[in-house]
Length: 74
Length: 431
Image (cartoon, rainbow over all chains, first blue to last red; front, side, top):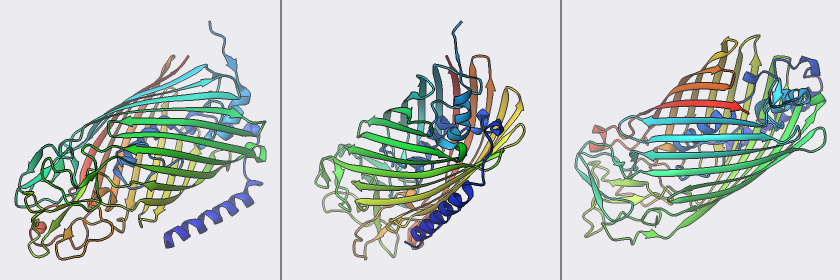
């Protein structure tokens, strides 16, 4: 439970920091050339494959997306 | 010649919203939006020492109807063979086990790791998602998923909504998913901590069982600078129902000799008890990813910490470097490190002089465990699509319970390390 509380505190801190910081962060619309590059996008296809492998071999799942289930492998 | 639509607006939206899992109408197509985007791969996963092997075919397709609406379809077929650890410990004596079906038995030779060689499965998984804009700064998606194995059926729904702020430099999203899984183990569902019985005696087994899984997800992406973006996500998951592995069991050994003790009278077996896990599990995790664009290459780092009420805490660090060494070719080295501590009911063995615990599992995936992944991907873009090859090496080391190596057990490697090779061929294209 200590770890759970640590996660909650960390999350709250990050959320507050994000809200405070958002207004001053970011770029203008014409400065998005690098962000638009294909290699800056997440590879959802590979991520799905990796998630399935690690889900069946370790006790953790999820993170970026849903932890889910959908497999008798764990 | 097919007329393709220019989509500068979509590109700009994608620049912010498509990063790190947001929901643009289509992934960034810097120049054009195609009607269909297809991503296919064939994967080989092979563990050493004749353990699990998987050949998997996966196809995902995205159809952009216009700049505001799209749908995804994904189909995966897995073919699994090989042997998987049963949870029993090795011994200097031969050990006889009844197979999961209860119709025959197999013998593990002295010193050999007890593997269940009957592992054979084919899995079909299908999912579909609809994505749509909701005004200028919001998007939503809804999806269905289903998968089928001969002893397992999953049906799930999910939904997600997200909103942009701050000139689309900030995006906040909220998601939820529900899954209902029906479990029909070969030979029946074992009663937790009931003994393995002889062939054709199913007194330790019941009928089918089920579980449900609810996931909630909240997160945010933030463009930090012209070169960097950050995502933070928190997820909460609640599983309820039959959460044990019906094919795993524990050895009961003599605390002095470390040898298996005799099982039920007349069974001719040693004492092996089917594992028993709690019927609910609450997980929460915090995930953060940072992406940085160099002039030519890019870097992605992510970290995840997870904790559950089984007392498992895990941490994962993952790094990729995307090296565009020519305009049409890239190499992507990848490393990952994962560590977890054991679940509070994990036990490598049970001893014959102790009272039965409420819950116990010898599944090494719930033990103290570290794993390492190192890999390399090569990709080449052509006029028609992109071809890629990925090769990765996975190594996993688990630690037995601290008190497990008594007597004869001290002569054996109770949880031998496992290594696996992951090879993937991929091709994606648009038309």
